[in-house]
Image 1 (cartoon, rainbow, N blue to C red):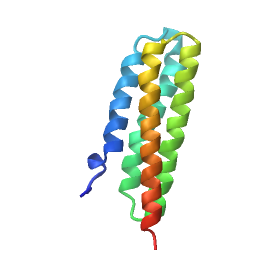
Image 2: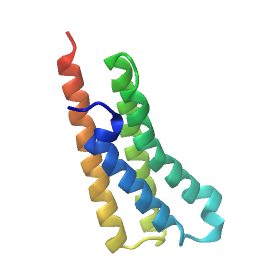
Image 3: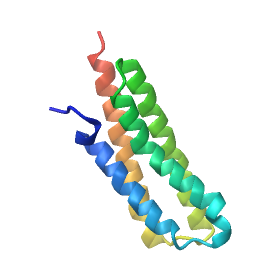
Amino acid sequence: MIYSYKDLEVWKKAIDLVKQIYIITRNFPKEEIYGLVNQMRRASVSIPSNIAEGKTRQYSNEYIQFLYIALGSCAELETQVIICNELRYIDEKTINPILEKLSEISKMLRSLIRSLRNLKP
């Protein structure tokens, strides 16, 4: 039984993704600290944060809305990762696991949204 957002696998995977993004962006050029680094870190943190906030809401409609926001942050982060690859800040070896994890998290979020919709009367 899931009692807390901390019990959700999607939240745990999103936390792991945040750690990966923070590690990867440490080596970015200094001029990107207030650009891509900041945006990528904020987008990554937004994913588990919105999962957590949604889970604590009283109504499933609110929860679903926060899951959609998390899903949007996944798309935002994916775009930023692709841009970083194009700018050669990260290589193929680095980008592929991140894109795979983002895809997995996005699928899990969609599945969770579907299951919450099916629970509604």
